[in-house]
Image (cartoon, rainbow, N blue to C red; front, side):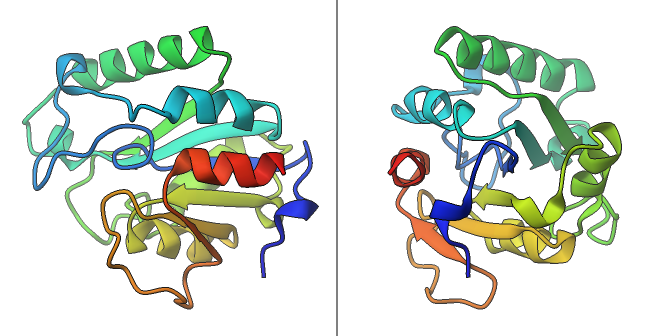
Length: 184
């Protein structure tokens, strides 16, 4: 069982994007920066988390690109602006990994662990056993289990998700509640 007291600056934080960092669109995609809207407490949460984790990476499924509803440039613009605002508020995102594949069996599409392995390849100092994913969907929790990392569910968009659940180590109402728990 994940004990937040064991987390030190050697740990890596994996974050889902939509529904964790920003408001999710119901049955649709955030297609451009104008549609992207941080949760009110996200920037505060990420400033706290930046002090406690060695690496912070985002792993996000982005089928909207694969479906042609948006371009890679649109997605890059979203992430560039998102990171800029996070950094301006004292937070940090080291890198964003995304999967635009349409096939659910793609190694990089959550719940498959490919994006975690990409991060490990890019950053040799990532220890997956000293990592956790914060996500708002069971697919994020599956990603964590499949990559050998700890799982934290935030109930922002799916509050009816049962807990306890074998895929979920810890559960919080949102990212700030998790950040406050890390802070002690």
